[in-house]
Image 1: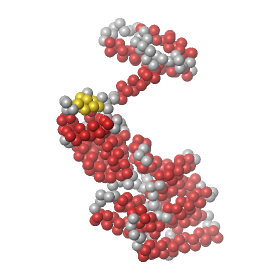
Image 2: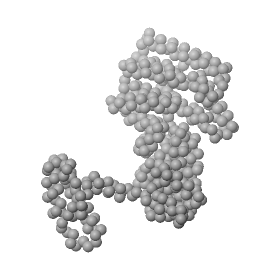
Image 3: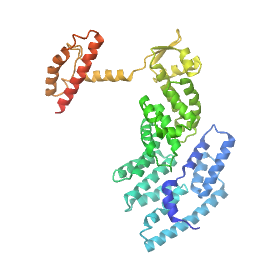
Image 4: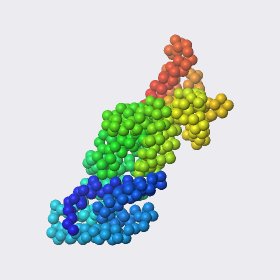
Amino acid sequence: MEVNKEDICELNKNSYPNFYLADLFYILQLTHISPNEKTETWMKLQDEIKKNNMYAYYSYVCEELNIAVDQDLYNSLKKNADEEMNEIEKKIQEASENFDSVDTKNDVLLKANFFCKIGDKENALKEYEEVYKKGIGIGVKLDILLTIIRISIFFNDLKNTKKYLEQARTQMEKGGDWERKNKLKIYEALNYIMIRNFPEASKILIDAASTFTATEIISYDEVIFYVVILGIMTEERTVLDKKILNSSVILQVTSSDDDLQSYISSFYHCDYRTFMEKTIKIAMRVKRDKYLGRHYRYFIRNTRVRAYRQFLEPFKSVTLKNMAYAFGVSEEFIESEISSFIANGKLNCKIDKVNGSIESNQPNERNTLYLNTIKKVGCAGARVGVGVGLGAEAGAGTRVIVRRCLPADLSGAEANISAPGDILLNRIQKLSRIILTCTVQSFI
């Protein structure tokens, strides 16, 4: 059997492992698919396995899915794979004898790439590790690490994924090019999704969407799908508006995906009835996704929590009837949902059963930031009504400045301000300037 050495090596960097197989394998693990879909998916997976004589992967799949191995098929796949391996070993032997410097890089990777292609995880990692230890260039080392990361993600090996991501980051600092850095970012984001670090995954994917090149592991449409889903779960409204809803890069995909576009648009524009309707459709797509599917229940809970919180935030009190109407569900459903999320600490409100209302006490982020700042600075309640507790922590120079500035800066210009609220605001604004002055002075 003739083997094209160049195809095996160069193609591997972008085509193996074949993540289409991982998609099919994940679908077969779902319990809710119909018998017909399961049969069709299994046939598709077998066809892909046969194309590359993946006897090792076939054995792995059968074991994981508890399916009996077709021994005739296994023997046929292994026979063809062994013939291919014999050809590879001959070429490696010829290269070692003739030492063709042009082909040396490809020759040392032939065996590793072959094991990667047939889905033999253990042997592939072993061969790549051996090549990695040899005196090869930084570019080849990075390609090896990226391939190992893909193998680890392909087999859902979180431990190795983390290990080799760290190695790749270290190597990338030594001179990785633009394309490899972008690929690594996508791999990192997928790892973050797998371990449910959605905020980090969202930030990476939003930034990487415009420079995406990692088609060997995920499609561009999938990247945009993740951007929208993770954005709704983790990002602030300003980010949703500027970087997702009104991003020309994102709109290229969402404009042709009505469910996805309506999903994020309805959330941002507070059309909660449409949001709940689209959540049902989007949830089914999430459930069938090999990265997000493992977090399906978490996704369902947290997207609804964000919608409920966003709805309740402007109100001090709202009736169950009005909230149920806004979301297009029954009062009983809303009451059950809100009660559950209150008990879990997800919502800061309480239900008034007598009046059939929800009394909201959602924390305002600006107020929270202000209160935390005041606590850190220290409210002493001095003669101006607002004190600064820097004396105990700052240096001597800072204390002098505070004592000198407070009476002078906060005593004047208040005679013309009659409203107590205006006086307080005026004092806080002056206080902020004093704090800034003290902070700068303490570093001088």
